[in-house]
Length: 135
Image (cartoon, rainbow, N blue to C red; front, side):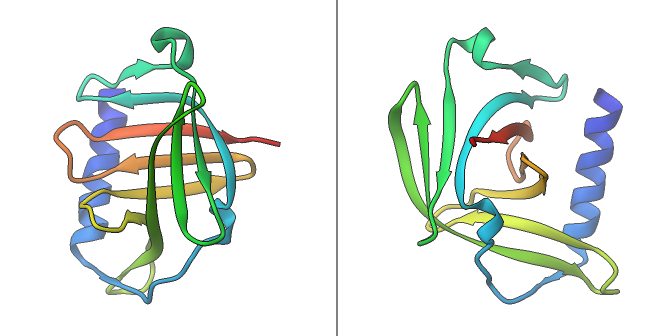
């Protein structure tokens, strides 16, 4: 797992350091409710889940670019956001970025079917969180 995290971090910084931002665009693929499955953080990839923490979390992305995070059905925050793509100078690589307005918080995001993966950058212990779309 340490090797995987190292690869993700190195690849992320390599891609981000040589990239240019494209124009800002809202990603409608984020719209809806996402249920938290687990997070891995730290250099040892310590895993936390709803079972291990006793906390149920969900993210709600609205069509008017608001992200709300709930913990045990209590609203913890509501922030506006925007998405954009980092495009490498060669044009061969792109990363989808989720940025919360008025903060330094940036996450790369990837959606595959009903799964959302968020990787938080520019923090000491990088975290990877996994969510499933609520049906």
